[in-house]
Image (cartoon, rainbow over all chains, first blue to last red):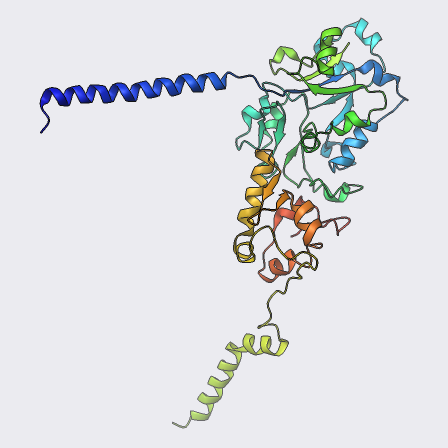
Length: 251
Length: 133
């Protein structure tokens, strides 16, 4: 038989023990969550180098489209885009002045998914078919995509394409190593995550003859991208929207 | 009971008609035939025991899908300790079942099942791959 006093004393000690465990768990969890990611993939685009290449160089586009079975659809409203050329005033609408117009006149500007740090497409996706990986890649899982196109509407860069028609018949050379997409799903650039997994740079970066696309790890202070961001003046597309794009343009 | 012949004749016709599918299949010789998928010649062991693959290959493939796409883990350690690359086209088709038409499709067609895996994943044997439906 336990007396009233002993019972109360024991209960108090037990409660303290439970509370103490919770405090310790919360403290240790907080410490590990605050740790910075080891990798943060980013790209620097050097339009100056890009324009040095022969007029109409589309090697990066061809390499990307060949690697990822991107269809060549003739109808523009069905177009599927991963990396493409955009006029300066459309890529940087807020940067446009009569002077920049002259400087960048006729220069191609490669645009692609910005793999934003704060991606609006991820926020609106109702099925988590698109999500942001720990290394910063904004990934796409076609298996989960229900084709609602919220992400297409949310992306301020037009980086997402919807498959309005079956893309298979419009793929010139089918690459068996990479799946195609099907009618009714959204697709976009994935920074070649399947190549990164093997330690290779993205296909567009490898294909560029002028080395105008530079890819690397932002978390590594010694990386080429960090070096360029230190030494050159770069801008990002529509930074005022707060999406924190991870594709930088050397101006 | 003068209608006995008519009644028996009618019953016979009825039984003949209702059992027609059975006679038809027996004559065609299809009723006892299974799907007969073509097994790989040079590889003897799948990534999991045959009995498991026969009943639950989709469970395994869905697990593969999630681990590769969502968790970036592209290697699979099989029950016998062998490590495989997680890839439907690269491992299942290219390493063992060289043509899906001879393996996957035979059972799926027999069961009247259309797998939408092949709407996206490519069968290297089919140059311009047709969708599986």
